[in-house]
Length: 235
Image 1 (cartoon, rainbow, N blue to C red):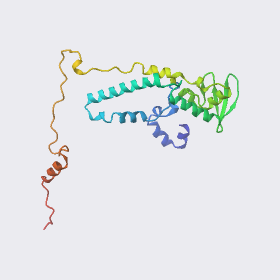
Image 2: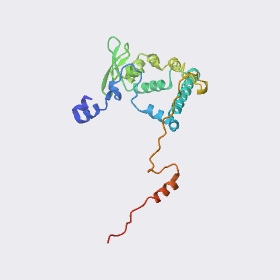
Image 3: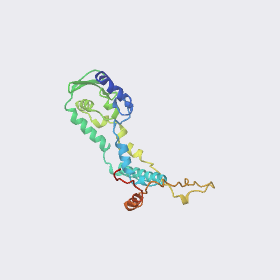
Image 4: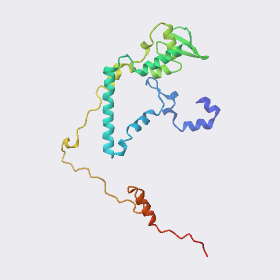
């Protein structure tokens, strides 16, 4: 951000108005085990409730609740029975990616289990005891980066031993252990002797606006009934 401010102050001021704390990884908290800054979550949610949006509000909320309930139940089945590895698929993919990038790193030993790792001409300080790296990816994601992986492989240790337990099968199972409980229908709810919730008062629409429910024929018929001014020449 400092380099951008020096290069283009107007662009820097424009980005500051967008609240970069919510989208820039430079402001993310350490230890959250997540560095995603995409909008995939909201896009997936909108696609999931695309059919439910056509329903009234209460039916929409009921549909969302049922979908979340089923999703949590399926995730628990995967974590409890189908997942045979120690970590999730995403964690294993990140580990393989870090191992592939470790071959391009150069290691330099230092004291107190702190080392310097160079990649593409840039040096990074790796603290094996604190499980931290100068690139901040290890602290942020919880999975060793390529610089830390280079040191782990150099010490002939397993990369999996330095991965956060956040990605373990046990944690995934605990996340979906309880899930969402089913809800019985309204006829089975307890009676409280309160006044029922009434619908909003009926309001007639704009009589001048043609209705789209009748199709194109009704719309064309109403357009023909509108008087038009003569387009003849003036004498």
